[in-house]
Length: 211
Image (cartoon, rainbow, N blue to C red; front, side, top):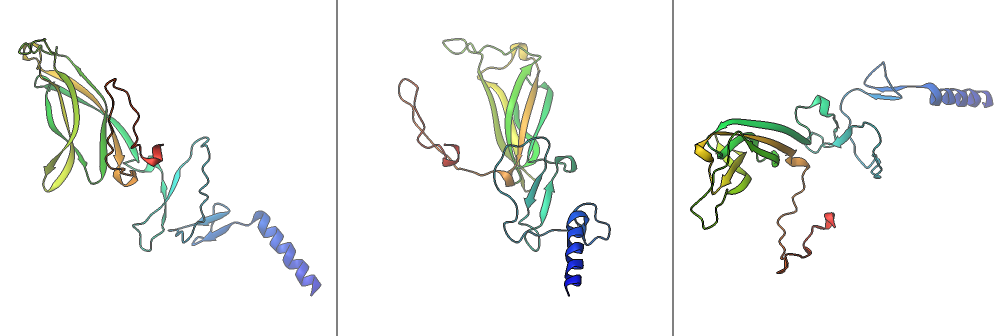
C-alpha cells in the first residue's frame, strides 16, 4: 500500500510540473486550453485594480448569451468597433459655413457621439453689420439627431451663427469625432449649478463617481 501511495504522489507531482490540460481539445497549447465557450458562474476573476503595464486585452462577461456568462475577449484588432473610437471628417464645398443635420450613420441607440475638434477653412467669415457692434457670429458645433427609415441617428450641425462668409464663399469643415459604444457608458443624468456675480462657484451636484 505504501508503494502504491508513493507512486501516486510521484505521478501527481510530475503532472503539476509539466502537464497541460485541454478541455474539448486533445492538443492543448497552454497550461489550460479551453476550446469553445466558457461560462463564469461566480467571482473567479481578480477584480483588484492595479496600474496597467504593457499591452493588454480586456475580458468581458457577456449578459446576452444563453446561458448567461460567456467570456469574450475584447480585442480591438479583431473588431470593427472599439469601446472608444475616433475618426476625422472633411466636408468640402460647404454652402458658406452652414452644415445642417449631417447624418453620421451612427444610431443613437448604439453610440454616443462627441465633437472633439472642428476647424473652418477656405473661406473668410462674413461680418454681421446689422448689430450695433460688428459681429463675426458665434462659432457653433452641435450633436443632434435625425430619423431615417424608422431609425434615429446622431447628426451634426455646424455654423458661424449670426454671420455667413465674405462674398458668400463656400468653405471646408474639418471635424474630429469621438464615438463611444453606448453599452459601456453610464448615464448620470442632468446636473445643474449656479455661479455668483463674479462668475465663480463650486458645483454641489457633481456625481459621486467623479468627486
